[in-house]
Amino acid sequence: LLFALLLVSIYGGGLFNIILFLGVFGWVGTCRLARAQFLSLREREFVTAARAIGTPERQIMLRHVLTNAAGPILLGFTMSIPGAIFGEAALSFLGLGINDPIPSWGKMIADSAQYILVYWHLAFFPTLVLALTILGFNFVGDGLRDAIDPYTDR
Image 1 (tube, rainbow, N blue to C red):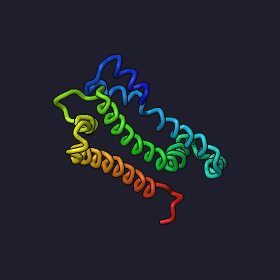
Image 2: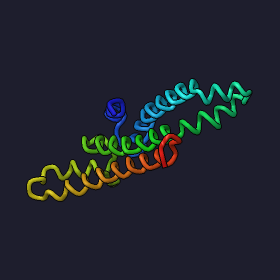
Image 3: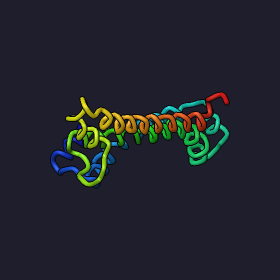
Image 4: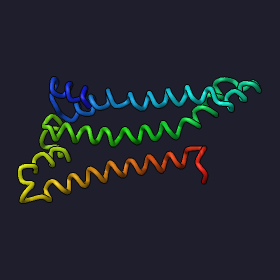
């Protein structure tokens, strides 16, 4: 978010710039998670057993390692979506995000801040919808992880 804030302050806001800057820096966490999963899974006993019986490396990678790493990687992707939504809302709240006439929850919250004592609902409802959207993506990611993870008891 800090690099996106720096780039937006240099190059300006707008829908394309926000998507580009958040996308450029948003994949790093998921990539690190995927790498850690693959490095961890390649040392497990089932991979050693598959190598011992002569299974080709490509089949080990696709059938054993990738299927076991899919749950955490999918969770990482679904957790990066709320991060991008919150990043856009934060940049728009600061006035560096999406320009008019495109609506943004962060811009709605920022515009209603001066009226918060009298018209509290102008800031409350965009904040509530933003929080519910982020919470919804977190629940979807958690449900997908539970459905895909081979170690959970069903």
